[in-house]
Amino acid sequence: MTVDRSDPATALIRVGGDLAYTTAGPLRAEVDRVIADAPATLVLDFSDLIFIDSTGLGVIVHAWREGQQCGTALRLCAVPRFLETILDMTGVTGLLDRPLGEGPTAPTKGTAGTA
Image (cartoon, rainbow, N blue to C red):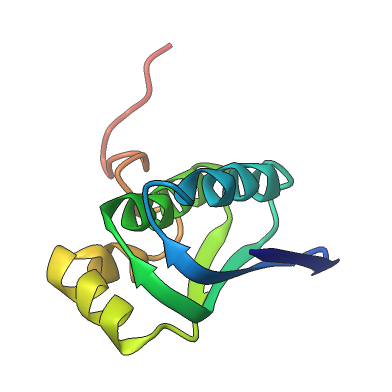
C-alpha cells in the first residue's frame, strides 16, 4: 500500500497484493487517517490487487460510509475484473454509485429536525 497526498483535494491509496483478513487492518487505518483530513475525493487504486476477501470488501464499504459522513467521495480505479464481479454480486457497486450524501447516514427527505 502506498499513499499519495500531493493533491490536497484528492487522496490516492494504491492497494496491491492480497487484501484479506490478515492485511486489511493497515488499509482501514490509513483510510481513517486520510478521511480525517476530509479531502473532496479518496481514490482507491487496485491496479496491483491480486486477491480480496470479505474483510477487504468491508474496508471498501467502510471507506464509503466514512466518506459519506464527512463529505469525501470514494472512487475506485484500476478495478480488476474479479473485484468488479465481487462488487456487482454483493451489491457494493450500487452503494458506491450513490451520490455523496445519499447513504444510510443521510437525513431522510421530508423529516423535520427536533429541537
